[in-house]
Image 1 (cartoon, rainbow, N blue to C red):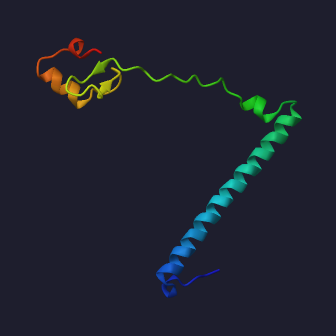
Image 2: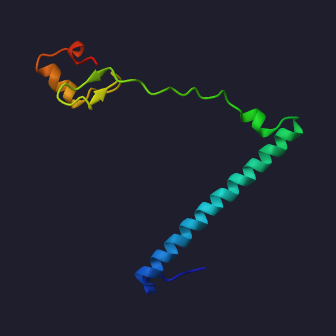
Amino acid sequence: MTINLDNLSLKELKDLSAQVAKAIASFEDRKKQEAISVLEEKAKSLGFSLSELVAAAPVRKRKPASAKYANPANVADTWTGRGRKPRWVEAALKAGKSLHDLLI
């Protein structure tokens, strides 16, 4: 199948592009489903279900850290002490304050 792209308008090219993207996505979905079916059959032949074999330990979710430091100029600006220091913390440290001074 050969398409002469030079003869297509911009709208037709965009439509064709969207159709190609859909075709690629559906192709990948079909291949994934085929792979899952093969794996389910193999697991069943060994006496397991696929979900039993791929079940991983539950991911432990961290609860959000509570704020430890507050900006003296705007108490709505807070920082947990994790990650990169906010600009207001850097500015306060340069001004001679310590982290202890910024504690909530």
